[in-house]
Length: 150
Image 1 (cartoon, rainbow, N blue to C red):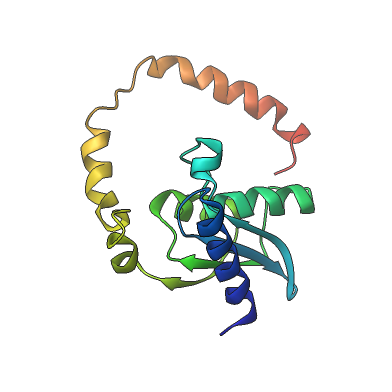
Image 2 (tube, one colour; image 1 turned 180 degrees about the vertical axis):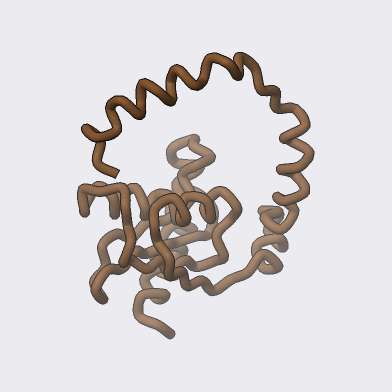
């Protein structure tokens, strides 16, 4: 077993014992060194976004003092859910390794494979309002963009 995946598994197993959330662990690596390790903390924090991958991204960003994790790799005990996929993409991580797949987590009723259909259904209840007001916010940010390092 890959040594970094082993650490992700250790996080997942530790989490199962602590009963802090689902059976998921994640590790972020840069230059062959572990930058952050985390497990699912949904139950511990009463936070539906506290998935292992998101928690690892938060820790890595804090440690590296950046929101851009380009050059890092993510090892996850299971294929990231749609929310975590988005977080991985926004973080700049390009290399991702996982073990379990949606077929595995569906057995536990996590339902990740059904999310695409759910997104279509949920978006039917979203409503765009005050569309003409948003350009003011865009302009304000554009004026300050040079002061913010992206």
